[in-house]
Structures are given as structure tokens and as C-alpha cells.
Amino acid sequence: MEEEGSSAPWWQTAVVYQIYPRSFADANGDGVGDLAGITSQLDHLVWLGVDALWLSPFYRSPMKDFGYDVADYCDVDPIFGNLEDFDALLEAAHARGLKLMIDWVPAHSSSEHPWFVDARASRQSDRRNWYVWRDAGPGGELPNNWKCAFSDAPAWTFDAGSGQYYLHSFLAEQPDLNWEEPKVEAAMHEVLRFWLERGVDGFRADVISNIGKDPALASVEEARAKVPPFVFRNEPVTHEYLRRIRALLDTWPGDRAMVGEIPVFDSKEVATFYGAGDELHMAFNFPPLYAPFEAPAWRERIEVTTGALDPRDAWPTWVLSNHDVPRHRTRYGNEARARAAAVLLLTLRGTPFLYMGEELGLEDALVPAACKVDPGGRDGCRAPLPWSRAQGHGWGGTPWLPWPPDAAERSVEAQRDDPGSMLHLYRRLLAARRASPALRLGDFAFLEAPEGLLCWRRDFSGDCRFVVINFEDRELEWPQDDRHEVEVASDGRGESQVYDSRVGPHQALILKPTRPARA
Ligand code: NOJ
Image (tube, rainbow, N blue to C red):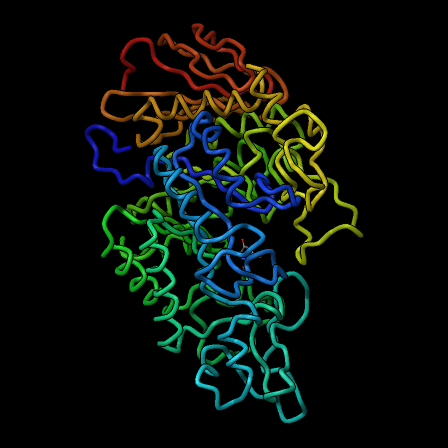
């Protein structure tokens, strides 16, 4: 996957496809997706044209946070299969040239993890210090004013058995691990080694900015008391931990990479997690994900991101959807915008992360409040993927969540049969990206454009592409002297024809110069 004339590692040229295992494909017909289901659909992903997969957690878990509460970091939850199924998936992925990244959840475990069971058993337990414990105040008060995610509840729960509070940035069933304890760091490094030895190509590190804590655990201003995203924004010690994680990864052959989740809404701070090229390989940068579909907002987020990352030579990531936020098809309100957004996502400079189902243009499922199962209310974007038109959509049993809207028409089967579908648009975009060093690795520069349009240029040793995105619901003009061919159009209109300077409502285009473009 290395680009000719460049020594770029695979994770810079790859398009990564995120799989939420519960909802991707169900091989055993119990209504919950599984590892064998993923293996059975790898050929489809190769047909689509992605380069790498990231699997959300599939480890043993009581599933209070659907796998982000890990009870055994080195085993597969029976609902997803077993370690043999994992090895088979990895082997099948590699046989098809796909890289495999897995989620690593280092900031907290499940309260049912034997480490925590041991830690809470007594204050004298060998593992007591593996978690963060504090005494109650003289009147029984909480140790500080921090609030956990998902609710406004305190980030502390009192453990009556041992008489102290423990810290949890998320649910009470997800106690924070104490990275100040060297044995915790060593244990989490062991987990990395376990999976590296099995052959994974990298990790997505869950809320990695949470591993370093303010040693004083001091109360903060009330408006910023929510742990994620505010309290552990950027503790200096986190960077020490990250450098040691990077050193471990660097001792393995084959460019093993880590992308860290940094739920901090300031791209400059996100950039610090790359260190001097000795911390994360990549960091998720969420401000663009929260941008409305408007030209000025996107221009600002792109400029702020590149302004923060470029000076550090840090490689950007781009994400429009994941398992934590409403899908961008739902947020942006219509299919035309979602199609234009796909062109944007796949032509920026950096590694794009696709969330399974966005290539089908899936909207969030409407999940009645009474049927919601996620403590964070994120059920809608986690609806199962419809594989076929027929009832059941390729799933054996009733899936664990309701179907997204128009599941039959949006199914993989229906869209593979329709060259005008969203699925085929993603496939054309991925093919165009794969064929163009400029799109994969090239320099990026905004070009002058009328209000409502964003236009940029990508260049890599003689290869060049222009990208035009119309954020407006009306036709706009972007006159060009040079002759350009429309390589990809978000609505398919005009593809393979000479560009005529007109950009349809919410249309987005990749243009390929038909003679060498002027610098
Ligand atoms: C971020 C994950 O993406 C989210 O799904 C999870 O609830 C929290 N981290 C806690 O692990």
C-alpha cells in the first residue's frame, strides 16, 4: 500500500472502516452480530475498496456499555465467538490485504474485571491501588465535584464494603484504572503485546486522554466538572504514558499503529497528543465531526486542523460518523448532502475513518425511549446493517436493535444492484482515491471560490486533483480555464465528461486535469 516515491506507512494511505460488531453481520442467527459474521462479509468490504478495519470491542464484558466495559482484555465475549474466530478473521482479512485494528480500552475496566473485584475486596488488597480510591469528606461528602458521562451523576461511587469512593469517568460499572500504579501500566502493555503477537496491525485507543489524572483530583469550576470531555483534558503525565506506549509499538515489525480517541474539542490540544512524532500515530479530532454542513464552518474546521497539525508534521484523521453520535446522513438532513460529504471526507488530506453503514446512506433508527438499551442513548446510530432486501435482511434472528429506515431499499443487496446508489458512489470514491497519489498523500490547498462552494487542490509529484463541494441547495458556478474531466460526481451526473463550470445543488465533484495542471 506504499505510494511510489514516498515512504508513507500504510495507516497514512489507508481508508479505515469501523465495524461495531454487534450490528454488522450475524453468522449464528442470535440477533447479535459476531466475528464469524464479519469474516463472512470481508469479500464485500474488499469489493467496496476499504484498506483497513477497526473493530469496536468484542472482549468479555457484562455489556453495560456494550463492550467498553471490559471484564477480560484477552478473550472474546461468547456472544461474538471465541479466540479461534478472531484468529480466523485476522487471517482472512490479511489474506485479502486488509489491515485489522482493534479497540483497546485502557482508561477503565468493567467493575466485574477480576482486577476490580480484587481491588474492592479490601483496602489491603494487592490491587487496591489499581483503581482510584478516596475517602469521603468528614460529613460523608464526595471527594470532589466531578460528574461522569451519560448523566449528571457524580463520577464517584461509594463502595460500602471497603468504605471508600472510587472514580468512574463513565458508568459506575466502569471504574477508572489508576495509571499512576506502575503495575496497571505494565498490565495494559501486556494486553497490547497479547494482540500484537496474534498479529493485529494496530489499535484504536478509547478515551486515551483519560489515562493521566490531575494528582490532586481537585474540584473544578462547575461548568467544566464533567470528566469527559473537560476534566482530564491534557495532563502532562499522559504524554509520558503515550511515549512508552509508542516505544512498545515501535519494537514490533510492520508499522503497528495507534489512533487515539481524544474527546477534547480544541484541535490545538488534540495535536499535542502526537508529541514530537513519538506519541500517537493519529488522533481523532472531533471539531469537524460537529461542524454543520456549511461552507464557512467546514473551511474554518479544516484550516484550524491543518494549522494545528501541520507544524508538528502530524497526520490528520477525518470522521463524519461513529457509534457515539447520530449518523451524518441524519444530521445533515438529506441524501444529497450526505453524498457531497462523502466526497469531502475522502478527498481531504489525512486518513478517513468510515463508520459501517454510511456507505449505504443509513439514517439512525428511530428507537422509542422505552426500547433504548444504551446508557448514553446512542442506539439510533448502532442499528443493524441490512444485507438483503428480504425480511430479516440477512440476519437469522430478530436483531438486538430495530432496523434503520428503508432497510430493504438501503440494503447492501439492493444498492449493489443499483449503479446510482450511495454504495456505488463510495466504491467509485475509494477507487479514485486508490488510483491517485494526490488524493492519498498530496499537498492540500484551498482555491478561491464563490460563497457556498469549497474548492481545493491536491498535488503529489505531478498527479493533481481538484475538488469542488457545493454546500448550497442551488446550482453554483466555479469557472475553470483548464480542461478538466469529472472523475467522480456525488450524484453521478457528468462523470467522465468535460467539466462545464457548473456545480449542481449539493453536488460535489472530483476533477482530473486532462492536461498537466498549472501550478
Ligand atoms: C468512547 C467510546 O467510543 C464510547 O462508546 C464509550 O461509551 C466510552 N468511550 C467509554 O469507554
